[in-house]
Image (cartoon, rainbow, N blue to C red; front, side, top):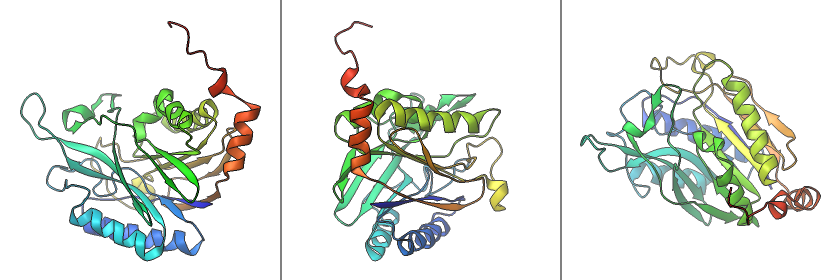
Length: 272
């Protein structure tokens, strides 16, 4: 199965961002992809108010995404925001949601691990998710994760133990010293310690795309990656918007799990 990772840079306007989804989905379909992954925060980039644009996954914005996917005959995976419950101070929050929509696929996932790190507090404005989500298409099983989730190997191992061939990781990875190296290392590590493909698709660097981003927002650094089950980087983007294409092969996953049986060898009988 051929898949694509569309590294784009989104802004404040959800409708303008939909046009980017349409454009890049068309490009991915023309390249033969059957599934295209977009970054986190496609509906609206971080740094802008999220509650006014948050809507359920059956709302008009998500419906447009679904129609784009159906029109091009591909599965589209991207980040949006859905309504959440108020925080402890009574202030509104959203859920950081992934939507996967297309032929025979319509699921959503709310980010499990919130980015309360490097001086940023996502939990002030975002409600954490409570469930693990996977979906099947074209004979392959896909797990879902979002950005900061990539630092938690147990989620990826749970997907793999449930038969996932691929985990998809949309992100808006905040810039900073060593952050690109951490992103790349984590994507490779998650592929290795769960013997599956990892599609880590991040927002591009705004300045490389000529976009003005709000100061201090986790607006993306680029360097989207497609990593094999044995840790080989099959494709990597730079900082600018870019479309990555790679082949996903279930037999490669099965072969890796026979050669490096970390899932089978893991000790589950110890009180660690």
